Length: 435
Image (cartoon, rainbow, N blue to C red; front, side, top):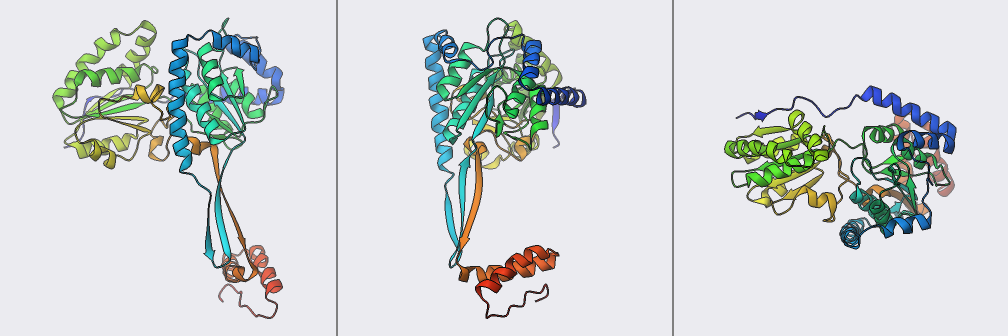
């Protein structure tokens, strides 16, 4: 049986890439040339903000004081979970060394980057959780300087809850600046900040394009967005929960795809019937996004069996993947392409997005086929080293000289030759390419 589309997307989740690229490139060029002054011009234009770019200690304290105690407790709870999970992740990276040959030692070190720039969206929604996810992991990784950058709202500044989250999670500086100008300021080291070694965090298409353009001169976590989610459900799944979960992810944005893959037609039809009413019941600000995403980007796919469902899921390589089907261990073993996996109806993508401990900065648009999400590993440089005795270098030098000459790289060969001549002056070596 081939896959049957009970609902097919009419649009693909791609922005007008050429136009966005040109806009972003021009802004980056102007800010790099104009420095702080040009960045402030764009902040006034796009953020409509003229306050302090780098929040003072008193401003941070004042913002934290505005956060209700219950919300503070929730943020601390989420931070603790993310921190503990990140610490376990870091423990999987260890410095190692091995003896390649007697006397020839090679090793590996995991070294955190010095400066991390963490972008925290704050436009339509205040992404408190993004501050927790990005700053906490950078802190656990051991970055020496962490900047949290978030767009201020007109007349308000950076959302107090974002300030509080960034502060308790370990940000060294909190920057009130959004969009391309915020990303550029962290990259170019404006306003007295160190130049970022890596940029992390989600953002709109302009932030994503800025990261794409700047990649190479600065590291990035990934080029992310728009967010996407896929649910695998069998006949035993609760159609109402399936439908609610689809809607919960569709509210991210008008172009956020949600997909339902199932081997049960009745379940698919029931969930599809429920979705419109669930969207209509959302607050207006959420309703518009969810309606457009469901109308234009959502798909419902009917498969023959669970193997075909799994193959379909791997083809889509979703950012978020939920399994609401029997035998979760089978799915855990079988599925290979996803940003984060949620097994069973007892958990949900929303948990991972906010508070359960796994990171919510994840690969989108099929990128889960080749990479995972944000973790302490993204902030770490895995570097290698070696040392050897003169005797132990002998065999390596001979092989290096001959391989280099076969490749036509005479300079490389002579770097080996000179050591053999110095350390073993009484020996004759055949170091020709055909030796």
